[in-house]
Amino acid sequence: MSRIGRKPVPIPKGVTAQLDGLRITVKGPKGEISRTVHAELALALEENTIVVRRPSDESRHKALHGLTRTLVANMVDGVTKGFAKALEIQGVGYKAEPKPFGVQLVVGFSHPVPYHAPQGIKISVDNNVLVKIEGVDKELVGQVAAEIRAIRPPEPYKGKGIRYVGEQVRRKAGKTAQAAK
Image (cartoon, rainbow, N blue to C red; front, top):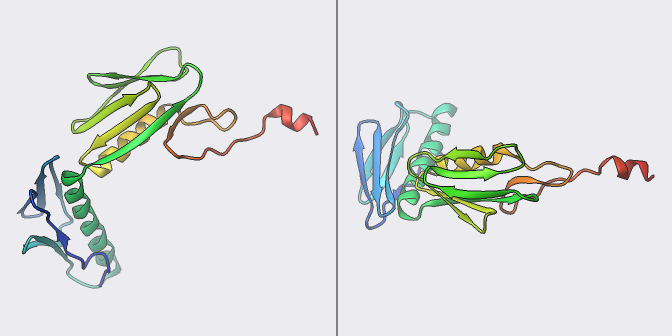
C-alpha cells in the first residue's frame, strides 16, 4: 500500500470538507477550493479526516493513490495557511508595479509588460523588485510564478531577469574572459 496514500488527511477546526461524487470542496478561513478526483479512486469522510482508497494494487492505482492524497492535503493546507511564492527582479531599471489587474513589469523591453492575475491569486510588490504571489491553490500559485518568471528569465552572462528568491543562476564567462588566456 502507498505510504503516503494510506495516511488520512486531518481536517483542522474551522475547515469543512464536502464530497459530491468525485468532487471534493474544502472551505476554510482563507477561502474555498474544489477539485474533481480520478474516477477510479474513492474518497470518504471519517471522523474529521479524509480517506483516499484505491481499487487494486496496480502500479497506476498506487501512483494515483499517493497523488490524490497529496492533492487533498494541499487543498486543506491552502484554506488554512495559504501558499506563497516570491520572485526577485534584478537588472538596471528593471521593476514591477502593482496594478488592479495584477502587476506591470518593466524588464528591458521597449514597452511595459502587463500580467493579469487569475481569480484567487493576490500579487503584491515590495520595494519595486520583490513580487509576492499568494493564494489557496498551490498549483495555481506555482503556475503564476512560473509565468511571471518566463517573461524575462535570468540570463547567464550578467544574471539580469526575474528569478525565484534564493534561486542560483549559473553564470558564464563572456568572450573577453576567453581572450585573456
